[in-house]
Image (cartoon, rainbow, N blue to C red; front, side):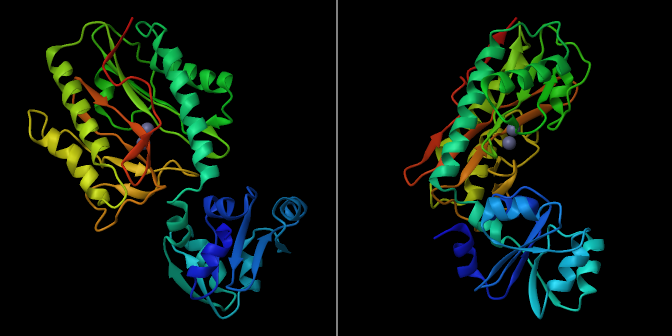
Length: 344
Ligand code: ZN
Ligand code: ZN
């Protein structure tokens, strides 16, 4: 079954797909478009700038609508139609409503399909991860001390490009010294100094699919406290990875890592969920956090395990692996060593 056929099999009523990532996943088309999926019929709705390309690329029935897309879509919708609640702005919803169709909010229908990857998707993610591993290896051979965070971030970008990535998965995080205490720090002008931990979260995209990897480096000698934080974070990360297997609760993976941090001196310093699904988007289903409810991991999920310890004014540690969930456990795609790497 194709992805579209699998989606059709789950639908109770026509679904208007407006999320760009979902349209791309279902059709391969990356232009401005929406997809109207009926149990018996699939239409790609786009404007005159894209119709030729959309027909050639997808082989689907392409309906040309007026520019601005949503007004044109409103004219096509009839009767009861499910919409993707997470992807529509209020303004677009109002425009769609003006057409008179009965719009029924839905959530997660395509995302549920995306969460389980097929072999082709896994191959793209494996390639993105292999390239990310090599970029880390090359960066670790360079000097960190005396360079700005921005320079190291740009260097990762260059390495991804040199190694054949089509894009960065996301703008690299490079957080040195006290900046490492912020989980989503953006690279700054700060110059890396001896005694810093340097958190680097960066990855490549290949074939439209994202990798994700974080490693924390030590620039020369670090304090005993930062060293202990590193060791606890690594123990938590390994406990998280060991908990990953098809059929386990997503929140149990979070708990396995969190329990290690909460049991010791760094309790209260692990500030986010342990991981997330990844694929077309860097963050997608399944989430691995305390709010994951009764959700179970499935074979073919691609997830990260990335506990962190964040110490205000001192620095931070995060260690992140990318894994394919299997019936036996996990295939770990991020192979750069997790022991603390000393850099000059
Ligand atoms: Zn991540
Ligand atoms: Zn990351």
